Length: 349
Image (cartoon, rainbow, N blue to C red):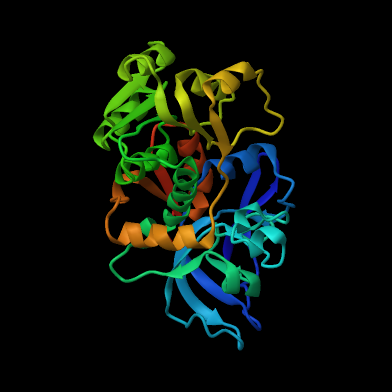
């Protein structure tokens, strides 16, 4: 099979690899779509301690089951499936508590386990039994199904942030996953969603997808504008859906007393910022992280996509053949598009 293999920092090569073979409790999926995530870009440029080259990366995917091991009863050849990222170990304290995304081993497809920037992906017994692998029906395209993984991450984050009826929500960062927060926040009861972003093109997308207020932080004081939009009190919930550490401080200044701040976007390793913690103290702010998702979030994301709540299609921009994966990465890094999809069986230029 053809696969995009991560060989080290800034090294990604499409090469021939052995076709995977399903044994015991494994299944093999023919990959029809794998979306490019910001974390794939970070792995490509900076590496990751859980990714040991050579490794196939990619973790937002979907496809068709083409082989099952002799012990598999959960799936059959021909099943259409969506595949997420985080795989619980099933044995630790966190996994037993149902919060496998906090597992200390932190298994994930495209990290310790082979990913889906390939024509086929092997899902091992642990992934088949406990991981985010769920059937999809014929009404859902493979491209749409691949976005169940980022939507699952949004469901985890919005659940932790406890969005309530009547809340004003700020999203700092108008990338595809940041903008996925917007319809979910409204479904949960937010009456005003404010999107903050430097790029005018991304703000245009935010407007089209239903943002109530957009703020170009390159042109105006975003903190002052949020205060203006909230009668001087600040927002109830703020998501930092970007890779800029400075927005963590900005979020504290934008927040209403007793506001909830979700540090949603991953940052480059070693990122630090000075925080005036008295702000947290006197405003009684609640700051939380949000990392990945649990299999139940992935299943729920599939159900929401199937119901067009949200309609996930506008969140997909372009698709590329596997041979053009570097172009897919470059377009993702340009911050001018929504989610970019790699279709491993598509013919390249």
